[in-house]
Length: 95
Image 1: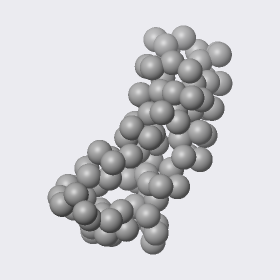
Image 2 (image 1 turned 90 degrees about the horizontal axis):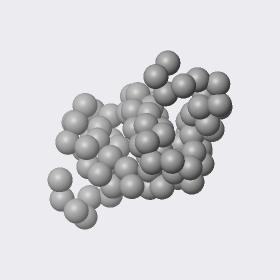
Image 3 (image 1 turned 180 degrees about the vertical axis):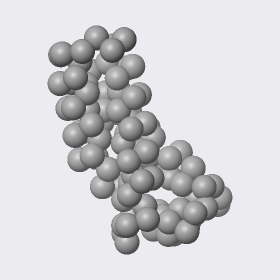
């Protein structure tokens, strides 16, 4: 993908099934997803999991969304991170 392509175009292409467009969105937003998740959960391992879960959730939302979803993923990330924090309090990592 070209570096100058905007997010809205990439989202439309991903909605049409072009995995390379979604991969570009992941490249652009995975760092942000990780940083938000790390801020909420406080550790590297869980932050990676939360960020990945949020990006997968964004992928699953693509067929029904009409506007770019990844810039609005921060609330989703925070929700996943908070859920992970609650799970961590009651489950061991090997459950």
